[in-house]
Image 1 (tube, one colour):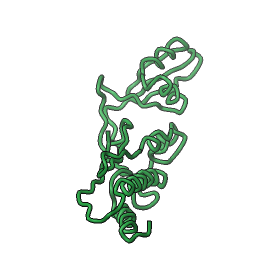
Image 2 (cartoon, rainbow, N blue to C red):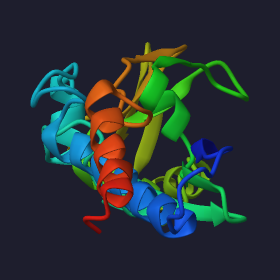
Image 3 (cartoon, rainbow, N blue to C red):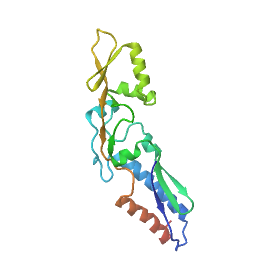
Image 4 (cartoon, rainbow, N blue to C red):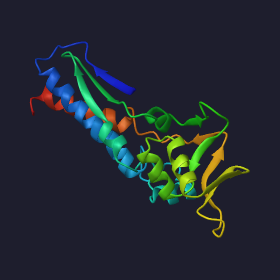
Length: 199
């Protein structure tokens, strides 16, 4: 799980601290989602662009924007009366936020879908390679060639690359999670308004 928290230790002003923390938590959820929507943590388009293969397979060029599950997983939770936690339990969120290298947990290669149709089939299978390969073998022929896995329906058809095999894949950092200066400014505004009695 990826998370961070806001905590207030001193309460020298008579304000509704849980209410303000809830408001700050909602702001940070909105800020994180906004960064994903804009394609950058500080300004639009600052993230590394998707590779051409990723664009073709996803049928979209926006980094981190695909099924919408990452954005919808970001939420805030009150912990007691003096703390709020903003988090996501989405698998891979930390890697996407911080960047890093993926290597296979089992076997020698990562199996990367080579087109949209194969990726959709893989998603329906719960990201299991075994089931799609098993289905393809019942409808045609499959074979490995170098760093690719190929399929053809019959001997009259051309071989089609359906998976690209890689020993590792580097994921660039696309920071959408965490406090930036502008977030701190906005949160301070929430608390200052309360202290001034304007909310």
